[in-house]
Image (tube, rainbow, N blue to C red; front, side, top):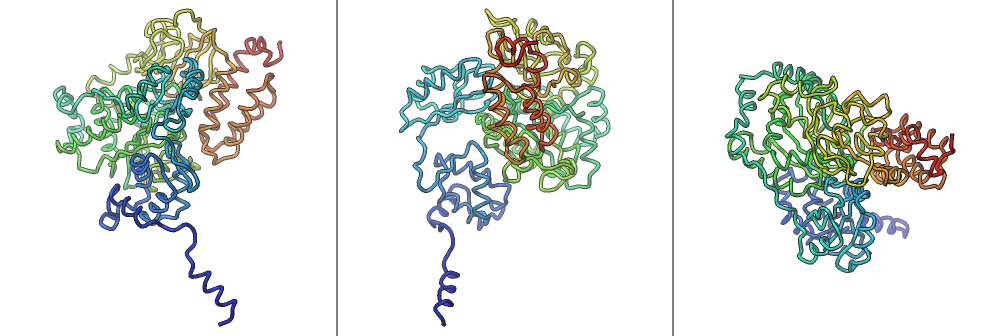
Length: 571
């Protein structure tokens, strides 16, 4: 054998890449289960759940952990690493890096928290923390905007946070989710709960009659898109099975916290509506994708589902609870599907739509939490009851998540079509003391910004588009004459830039470029308009398409205010 042949043989016999540590594979089996006994543990859709288990147990994900998980799941290391590094809540530690401190403080930097002093709080916590034991990080909206500013200590949320109460939480080791008092199954059933689901399964209620009831009530998707609920059922039912049902409980839109409100109080009302929806499309399984910023709710839903299984209301394993991992983009339904499949949450090109090819390539019904919450309520009280609740010619009820400069922020159940002025006066106790209405966001970060002069427009689907805005999930953030519009716009664009999945250039580059332009002393209005047009026309999903809305709103309705700050030319 020649020297060259010997060298080729040696290279071929050598193992490539970093090698697996056998003890870590054994540790994984102790944490997750034995994949040699239960082959389902190797299914790709379990990957993110496995990553959570390791992160929770160790506090981070080391590269040896990831290599062991690749062997455990029989997946390429590249697939494991790509998924783990996509999500903000996974701490991937490379071989040369030290593990993070035991406690992480996440300071919410959403617009509502910024208005409440989050920037100064972040600085104070950073200055006072011992970096050997505590790390301080910025974090996007945590869905507690009515109690801003908010800091998460481990998995414990400190509301109305300041350096003192956050420090006390650290000192006392308060790192676990706060207790939640919720309506148990027995209490819900004592008021007729699950009667509708029983009627559906036993043939006393038909899909057609219930769909007609929801049509008459005017129930639409309350996560943002506003698509009629009965039509979604029809679209999915028209496709050949098997089919799946998915609940989007990943309300990451800054300013939105209504789904948390319902889930914390009446999880079984939500679950009945979700199970009825799954029945309507003859789903093989019901998946609930819950945002990781709601750790206490994960336990609530897990216990509530266990109650249903023990009572024989659902078959064990029919309801599958999945945790998000800190990615706003997973609120987009196709990105959510990708995440449920154990992959990075990047939106799919459409068509086909998820109603045609969704989870595991099968027709999938995707609904928001609040949408299905109303199904048993509407059936119990009648379609006319729900439809008659509107105002100014609109139909139904809306759960407005109100934050910012009002006296009583919170979730306010109000008639669809109510105006902002009416909402503030009748439900929010007026403006906060010393503040005068300047502007408001009717639909969270992506819904645009309207001036005080347009506070008498009915708030509902289809009423705001002519003003360049939309209601979305009804996340209302109120700004006052004491707030800086440039800072608000920069905050919103910074959020979109951080949360862009990076898949398409118009969004990935456009959000970063627009943020840079906004931070200048003088705005290049022509370039901002052109950039907004490209992002709206060419981005794959709604994140890039809607990201310019706050800026376009300011250029359209706040020209005098911008001119007074010399951001744009007068006249």
